[in-house]
Image (cartoon, rainbow, N blue to C red; front, side, top):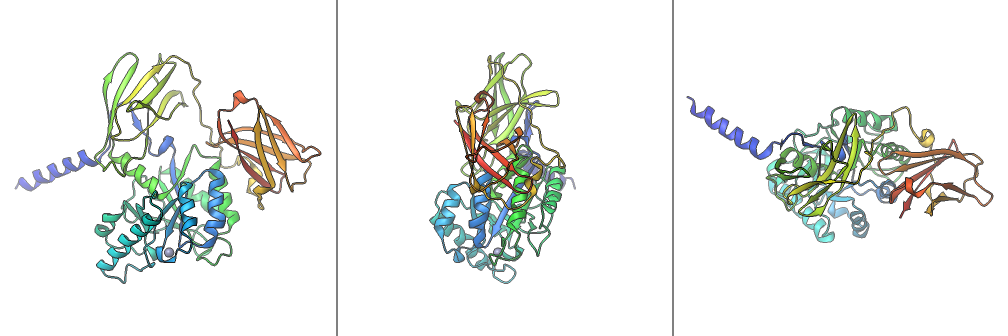
Length: 444
Ligand SMILES: [Zn+2]
């Protein structure tokens, strides 16, 4: 009577060796990229018009990506979807006809799943259509869905843990006047829930304002939620449903082994057993920076990869992003000392900038240009003697806040020494106590 037990054990070990994460000490794999606390997806269904007019420009403004679950028979404008995809947003399947999977045959399910993917990829070849959302949240057969997709969205209303119970029925929370999420406060409860369990929170949005879409949410509250996240980028990973799927599955399957150590280098093998053609999303790994190393360089397959040296509590970590099965990773000693960065995340009641939560935001009202140590902000329709000005980097870390009057020609000049700013994108927020305006600027 022992045989079944032995067979079970062998299968169990076999499955563990394929699917479970194995990471050699002292290396760690981030639950989410950059060792962020939680993943947040904003997903939009049915192609309601303000998703294009309002949501995409809003997300572009803050450098976030969203997911457009698209009913291929309903698409009026492939060019708009194509340009969204070119900006990094995900165009994914919401079937061909918005079919209710409770009422169709398995053959019809397969046709809906297969054809919608083919149609999307034929219009937007660079956008791999790898996820789908079930219309009416009515799930179909996993065995069919998994032939064409890596994950599927349902809408059970809860925040998923870091690994969802089923990749083919990932829970989402419905937004708008027929759902649970209408105000910044509602969003924040879900963000907190996600952070507390290192989880994965998916929002489902249809209409925005008065575009006629189902269960509309107001653009003002949507913006407030995005602004809240924009100053907490080092805590929340705002990303597409596809990217969260890839990261989650790779993270759970990765193997990290140190294969060689010298005084000045470590060599790692980072592998998994997932198909490399699609599972090529970078995972964030870290190890303590060796005590006598001033800094470090990281390469994979001889190409330099993104890295950060970060102080967490009292440990200095080397964080780096590598792709499983994409070649040996070599960490080498660098003699140039680097001051470790430390992420500071605004508390909930700090709310910098505190009055960003007011309404009526019009970003065409300001322009911001950084040139030779001075940020020049041109005000178009803003009449105020006293403005609060906040400057953030893309990780949401506040670099400066000050009160300043505009000059006679409606400009504000702020001196910021260029050695305080690395090259890249920054954000400036202005507030007159009632209204808030924001704009990106570039330091090159
Ligand atoms: Zn729908």
